[in-house]
Amino acid sequence: MRLLFATIGKRLYPNCSIPVPENNVCEGCGTIFFERTPAQFNYNHPEYMCPVCKGLGEELQIDVDLIIELTSKGATVIVIQHNPLLIKQADYIIEMGPEGGDLGGYLLREGWLDKERVIF
Image (cartoon, rainbow, N blue to C red; front, side):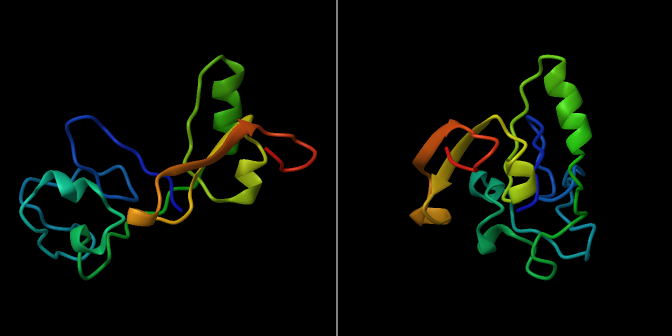
């Protein structure tokens, strides 16, 4: 899963930080988006993605060193991620599921991460 960024009041492409322009045209492939509705902010649903490029944009690389620097300065960093190497760096884990979409969204487990064993 790629990290998603959000800005209040602006609709962003799902995998990059570029706002969707007013003309609703995908800058990746030129396909026109549907008329905007609140449901379109759910990029996990195929109906609301660009039908040609499937909403894929620039893939962001997560800078783990920056996350460590921010947390060492007292900042709280929340990351949505499935990469086991990044998860092992976390202090606290919240697992949602069991699936995505209508089958997900339930709290499965949460807790402090044991750094020696990925058990929470």
